Length: 405
Image (cartoon, rainbow, N blue to C red):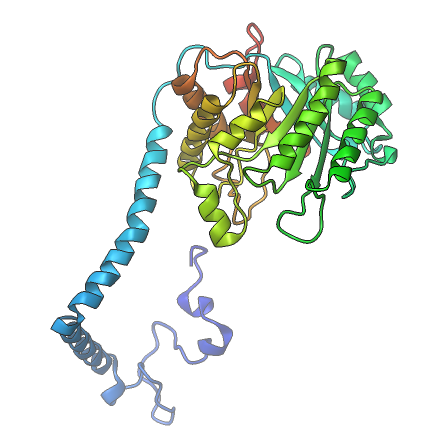
């Protein structure tokens, strides 16, 4: 009714005929009586008396001593469900409050995820010029360009990154010092019959071979995003150890996209038991992954938070937890949601770059404000707006001396 239409216009079509206009007089004598609108025993006054009588009857039944314990149980269940939710909301809102610590700005170790269009011929020099304009002068050091996906058996057809020669040369020309890492991913067969199986050592060997080939093509590193990856997966740790032997020998970075950390202890176990999808990692497992890579980028979005303040507080908490778990020799990056789809897991009005940057700065200030191997990662270039880039640049991402007026 926010559009100014009348109640009659808002009513379903099959009911509108039975509802007279607000200024209608009594029903015509030859018109059939309409419940709740015609005179006599079914007048509004009569209906009101019946409702009051029914209310008194319900109240008498509610006071029945035999309902004492059922009422207490119902009240206890309601409190059990609502009090934690309210408490969590208050806690997140408090985490979003406060002042920034000095120096909680870019360290020049930021990144951005780029879509596959850069390697399959859909992007050209004009697009590269626009990208360079956005990146130049910021703290972005790494571009994760989508070069996959991997096949379910771990292999990677060369046709999927056929445009890499042009893109790598163009970035080195326009953005000297910025590294281009090959973003490789696939769906894991952890929650369904289809997908890549890390339990198969032959599959892992093919992933390692794919890593060699992508580095042979000239990429400056490799970035893995394998999902859904359950907390405690030992086969993933083994894969990282095998791949890192290659990246270290070539002196290039190995980076990964990581799930968020349990905001409460063992929440991933509860989520796995109730839904079969343990969304989070334990903090201990996050640390095990972080110790096996050069960079770890937290996918700090898709939280289902309904408000910016709650989402920002959640990011602040995730930042603090990740700082605790990540060794100082590993780059820790927090994801910024530069995409605007709406679904049950992501509310674009709440999960904003602005709220994420504020949460990151507050979390960094509380957790480890002097840490240098830290940054943010913008997801994703093809969905990011000018406003997203400006928010990143103005509130976090400009190098010293390049900040906007």
